[in-house]
Amino acid sequence: MGYKVVVAGATGNVGREMLNILAEREFPVDEIAALASRRSLGTEVSFGDKTVKTKDIEGFDFTGWDIALFAIGSEATKKYAPIAASQGCVVIDNSSLYRYDPEIPLVVPEVNPDAVEMYKNKNIIANPNCSTAQMVVALKPLHDRAKIKRVVVSTYQSVSGAGKDGIDELWDQTKGLYVPGQEVAPKKFTKQIAFNVIPHIDVFLEDGQTKEEWKMVAETKKILDKTIKVTATCVRVPVFVGHSESVNIEFEEFLDEDEARDILREAPGVMVVDKREPGGYVTPVECVGDYATFISRIRQDSTIDNGLNLWCVSDNLRKGAALNAVQIAETLGNRCLKKG
Image 1: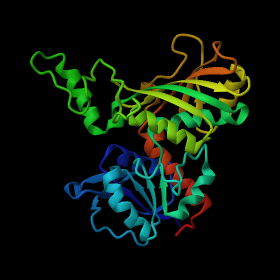
Image 2: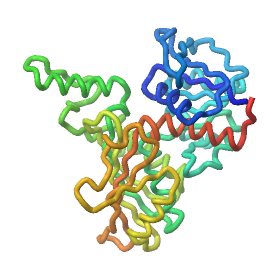
Image 3: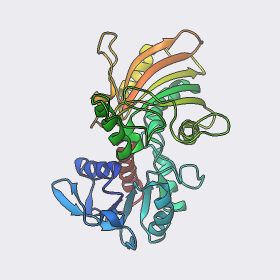
């Protein structure tokens, strides 16, 4: 016996990854429904060795379905998530819509699995921002040992974080630069992304932060510890898949880099690859398709009393989105729901 599972946004990058990961991890699915907008009605998507035709989310009856994984953006989620929740289906939402609602849990299972039980408040669980998810997986075991005071993070985020349009723009611009007269002007991004980096993700706020940077601050506090000070600079880079982060951590007490390395090696969801030699670290290309959050370049920060630096890389379509959502579903099933 298993669960009746809905994937909303099944034709998008994250929705397809959700279907892949549900199958890969052998999540106990009795029945699967793939939902999309009307314009994608009937599109076939893969679920393990099966092919599933998408159904129209408009008018879909969620009654009798156990879990719905949403990857449809904030506007559509605002319309459909309350409907699904009111009909008894638990929504695990990948958009930013519910992340900052104090009544809705924001969950990374390796970090705060107990928060899943708050789903009963509104029958909704929020999935964090991709850049936050991988960072807190790395921070949690170190915080448990030495208590983190402050984090300074710079992100190097792939274009897949901006969806299919972002991937297409990088591809088309790169090709166009090699063919005179076929240059592609920026459309999805504010400036050329091919062979360039853009220190701007999401909208600017009054204090000079971007919304992406604010998200990392707010979400780290909600998921991990509200007393941690966080400052972020988020940068879009010409990489198709895989977010990277340079993380500087200040602790309340001294933590030796060797002990930190040992702690991270034992931490759930973390893979340490940290050799002080050429190639002894992980880059975005190598993390694609993997479940792990990879940590490299662990070293003492000699400019402060209790500081460490590290390099953090993960597949943003997986741990940053689809994988974390499925892990939430697994945690929900193990702790709260009965199988059909």
